[in-house]
Image (tube, rainbow, N blue to C red):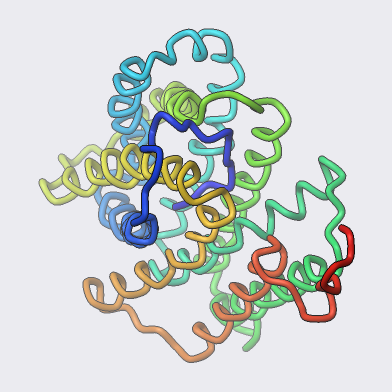
Length: 318
């Protein structure tokens, strides 16, 4: 699962030149796509709170030593309150929400809803930071949220008049997670400007761990989880969170924030594939159509693509 927060890139995470960023882009999309699968497996045994707590706790164990080795202890000491706080909205709440949602909705659906993160990021930046979207971005916001409404109405039974409460709550949980990611993005831009990305990533996992640790202990399952559940939880923490954050901020440094953020569009491809092949999930034409609408709206809202009429004529000053 991807976060919309993109703090200042830590150039120490990347070499001076890296021609193979596309391979790293694909690897990151595949890893984050797998996070939905591992969350589903882990949640069945541990429950949502313990799954999220294990995820951030293991990730913190991976990232803290690396941060110290990179010599960022001073930066962490200077900004520790802020980076710990951002962990609540950037990791703790979203990870619990997705774990809760995956009890009732499919891996593919949850990953498609996760692709709305840039939509909420753009909307919240407009409301909070005053970054008013232009013509293409406004069209993108409207189109993206229309796609979400169409997808949600069909998957929750609203369109047919037969509301599925469990699915509706799952969809709402995913959208709440995306809102939290959008809030984190604006919070990061406002209060963590210039903070090394590794410090922000590590601090957010430590902060989320401090919040979720007591809840995880309280809601720890009475029955001992299976070895496969432990492997899934470990993969979530080590691979899909700790390693993925390192790869994500490395991608920001070598390919730029816009390209790194566009990984959100590729995640559902892998997540849907994992769900179909490994869990036997089904994907309808309506679901794929709504996903295309959401991705198109998101690409417009983030400025990765512009409508032809919105482009400035050649030679015109910005």
